[in-house]
Length: 98
Image (cartoon, rainbow, N blue to C red; front, top):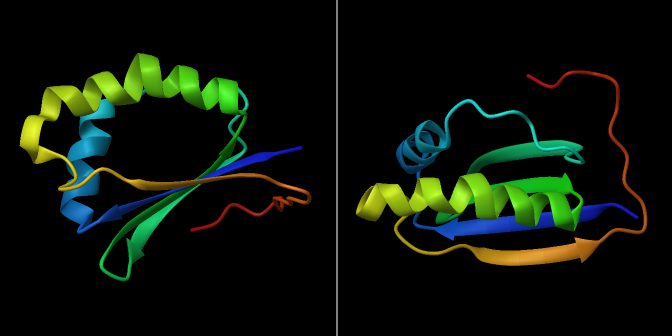
């Protein structure tokens, strides 16, 4: 079964996203991540990723959370609202999305 995490950052903007992405930097894509997407949503910023829970937890612990901590108040204005789903079905096509 695939693992899906959706994280909604209330009040988040593309500017917040760019600051956080720059803080994370160029890292090796974590093993087990099958897809990743982020973009504007009503009243905030939505991040969606499929990954193994273990790989995601390791990435958050070793890379993401330390990067966000270094940002202080320059990152997203509020913590994310997180929804985790153990999926029943998940497909990723062979086409690279723009």
